[in-house]
Amino acid sequence: MRNHTMVVLGLLLSACVRPALPGGGAGERAEKEATEKYQAAVAADPEFIDAYVALTTLYRANKPEEARATLTKAEQQAQDSPPLKNQLGEAYLLLGDLKRAESYFRQVIEQAPTFYKARLNLAATLERSERLEEADTVLRELEATNKDLPGLAERHAGLAVSRRRLDEAVKHYDKALAEPQPRAALLVAAGNVNFTLGHHEQAKKLFAQAVVDDPRSLEAHLGLARVANTTGHAEEASYEARRCLAIAESIEAHLEAGRAAEATGRGDVAKEEYTAAAKGSTEFDARMGLARLLVRSGAVRDALAELGRIIKVDHTRAEPYLLMGDCHEEMQEPARARAAYEDAVKRDLKNGEALFKLGRNLRDAGKQGVAADMLERAAKTGPVEGAWVPEALLLAGETYRSLGKREAAVRAYRRYLEVAPKTAPAREDVAKMLGDSPERR
Image (cartoon, rainbow, N blue to C red; front, side, top):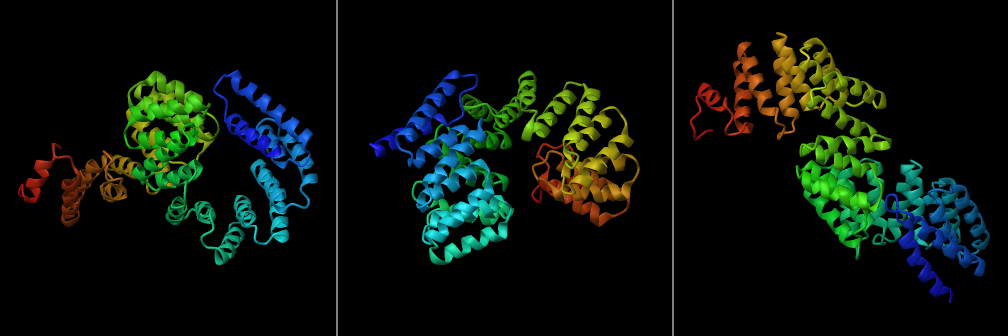
């Protein structure tokens, strides 16, 4: 009977711990019913640790104190069972009680040295505690005795991400994904790393696989929306963002929906979505979207006011200063624009667009020498597909030429011919100046 109850409760848990649909009472009712069933299971069998853990999972979002009290009761039932102690450690890890989670995992390892799952969990706990070297030691010790242990490659990957060694993380994720039936969460984690590295096609493939495994995976649909926005497929991004929001309320999904609406010229929709996303972890990017919309509508002064608020959210990023520079250029205030562009470059020395706009501003101010170097540096920084790159190289060539620096001018002009669109008006003049034949072009 108990095994049958575990199966039924497991099915209930999988259905009920998902985020409820926005504004829906159905999710709350299902959660209440599941809670009552778990409580009944505990009353019928005080050693039914799975029910305690399931209750904790239901409580953790809105009733953290009740979650901990439930686990305290479970502790009394698990003293002599390493597997049950490991479950309790996992629950504490889920709740963010890292000290207690670590204690239970270490108890399990002491009682049952070959209970490898506890060692993996201990490594995860140490990683979350930012004790990365200790986590690495645990994993290496485990690898020395069982290098093909399921879950080991995934744990190595997570640690590599925490260490910001993303190329290494990809290799570990590839190994983890080669194991049978990879979970949606693993596919999403691997997709996120590939996305960060700019491997957009691979990221899209992984996110799509995750959706097949779990059609209601918010993180997988969100990943697809991010890839679509980044690669210029705004309609696809909008569709995936809407699917996210049908699963659960998500500020990240609102942000992607806003970006998609902005890209397709639906300013009112973009404003609504950005406003919904302007809080928490997405506040900065959402407010930047609102500021861009203000600039495009001609409300430049309002945009500057919004940018001032954005800087209070995070003054270390270059984007608001870059857009401030654009606003001052629009208002024909070159000195203020130059100061804003300089602030942007200080915060991101590899921001090619900021380097380009600062260089162009300096050139217009008559500071030819520093302007030419700045413009060429901007083009080298990239990205190559940046719409401003050809103009940066053209201006660099013209500026070097005016300074009598022939070799530098030729270098910039030749690079211009490599990247400028075939229809660029200046291509023919530059080619003639260099004496290039059509074949060489």
